[in-house]
Length: 263
Image (cartoon, rainbow, N blue to C red; front, side, top):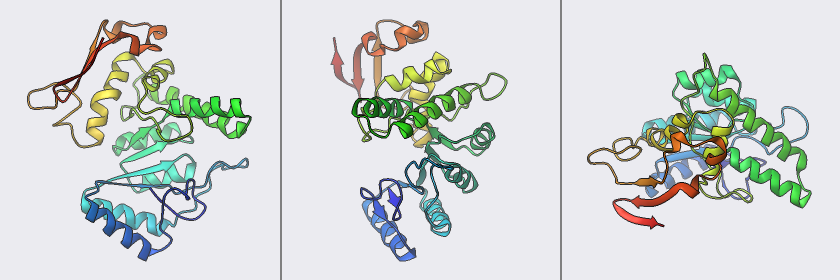
């Protein structure tokens, strides 16, 4: 991830303070065969509004976006606050992670411009549990948990009972106490408003569309990778309470045509 000084997670990411830094990093990504650029343009949570101040250079942000377009790379933004969301929509990025201060109008604009959203609801739930257990960062953890599930509810009922269709199954793995691609994220999407049909679409085809690999993964068809989950019951017929324990209904997993798990 690309950051500047004072960006969230700046100690763990690659800093780009000027055009020379950006050009150097772009060349490194090109040499490595990268296919995506991700930028963290804002600070971590602050108690006062707007909570997530923008700190990245707008000029560098635009240059990075244009370079990603030239290379046909995906361009993703770790954006929780209003300015990050608005700039991402303006630059027509490919995806926004978190998007806590997104509005209904933003979602409409994102859908019109094919911008994807990964809410990472479970990540915020885990962070709240950790904050409560440790007695640390409670204000930010509570704020982010509330905003995340409010966002899912709004997205699930975007207009005329039709959901925001560009939702992704995103885990925020690597964050505090957050598992990798846990099925609980799907349960939370279901709990806060998405139908079972849409949750399965989010978990399968949507990720393939976002990654531009719909010809390889995301659905079962001739010539695609044989990645299959076998269920003891139809997930579309499970109650919400049963969705909280989806793993109990998995009887086998085939990965790339090979049996990876069975009971």
